Structures are given as structure tokens and as C-alpha cells.
Length: 304
Image 1 (spheres, rainbow, N blue to C red):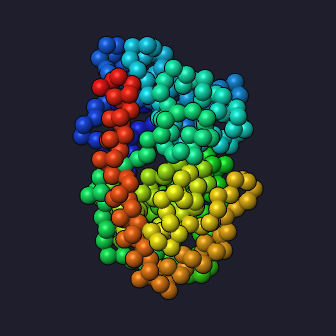
Image 2 (image 1 turned 90 degrees about the horizontal axis):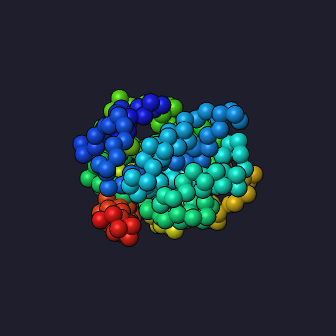
């Protein structure tokens, strides 16, 4: 991994992988391929006041690598920028990633960008703690940035309603922070309900972590969520149909009432649904299926 002068590894959130090493620069002739990262915030143009350094770092690395080895670009998000309209963002990202293989995290995101291949995430089920559940709802979401994509107004409205209803609710990173990865896994594993409120976030890892932890997931239906979460069977959806108009918010009152019912009135139902969600995660989102997708990709690119 190239040392990032703009951001450090959050060891309090995730331990640094044992099989990874930091390097200070790219050495030509040493690597089989390179993996770089972008999202919609990679639009970098200081003349327009764009000073988020994701795009700068990406373009600098591309210049350093040149044509020395194949480049795979992982695009973690969607073309919904707080400042620019989506067609401009799509065009900018297409230009800076030209000549690389771009990976999207969901099929919906692939359609929104207009190109790329899809690899859905996977993780080790044994890393997650399915512990005796405590009556609360929890969410995990960055508190700032990408407002148009995340549309936090839905989260904050539901949060306010739950508070008025007396439902225990924790926004991880805002209401509570953890000193290390184990503390987070323990808290998540003891949480009865997990709420995923985002609008345009492809395959949020936190939701899958909650599924492996046996939490009952209440999620918006976007970015493929409605293809594997079946309402009332292995989780709950806040809307039964995808809402494409950004001016229309999912029904916060119905969502708050559902979470209240699961946490305070029918915890046994939440426990049952949480276990069904865990079965789904074990079927679809393991590190084995993740590795298989990467193996197929690398074989197709003649890297393996």
C-alpha cells in the first residue's frame, strides 16, 4: 500500500491487514497489477475550489505507474456529487479512469456510471460476534460529506422520531465511538436492530457486518438491497419500491414505527429475522465468494 499523505489508516476502526505492507513510492517492474480507488469526490479541480485530495492522489499514482502494469480502479460510490450534476461527474471519472478496469460495488451503481464490472463484497463470517441481543437500534454512517448520495435527512428524521418514542438508538461515530475493532464488534453483536438509511450507497459494508452479527436489518431498498433482502423474511425494507426522485424521502414515520415495534414490542420477531439475515449473508457475502469473483476477474485480464 502506498503511504497516503492526506489520510491515515484508522486502526481504531480496523486493524491493518497482516498480509499488507506500506511503501513510500511505486517501483516499476515490481508489481503484477495495481489497485486504485475513486468515488464521486475524486472530481479534483482546485480552480473550481475542489480540494478533496482523493482525485489528486489517484491522478498522481496513475502518472507514476504509467503503463508499467495493469490498473484496476475500484469505484466505491455513485455519481451523486454535492456540487456537480451526475453527467458531469460520470464524464470526469470516465476520463481519469480511462485505460483501467473499473469495478463497481453494485449492479445499480454499474448502470448509473454506465460502465465497469461488478464485484460484490465478502468477509469472514467468523470475524463477527452474534451475541445476546440488547433492545436498541444502531446505525453506522459517516456524519459528513456526500450528503446528496447519503441523504441523511431520512436518518436524522427517523432518529428524532425514535427519540420521541423512547426507543434506544445509537449512531455509531456520532453518539458513540470505540477504542478498537473488538469494542465495535461487541456492541454491534449485542444490538437487536440495525438501520441502514442511505439512498445511493452501493452495498454498505456496515449492513453486511450487521447481518453476520445476527442483527435484524431495516434498510432502504436501493443499490441492489431489494434483490437480497426480502421484506419480513430476512430483513425489512423501508419502501417496497425504489424511489428515484431525490426530492421524495422514504416514509420516516412508518420506518420509526417499524423499528419501535421490533425493539420494544416484538423483539422475538427481530431475533428470528436477524437469524434469517445471517443465513443470507453466509450464502451471499463470504470471503470465499469474494475471492472467487476476484480470481475470475484476474484470469480474464490475463494477470493470473
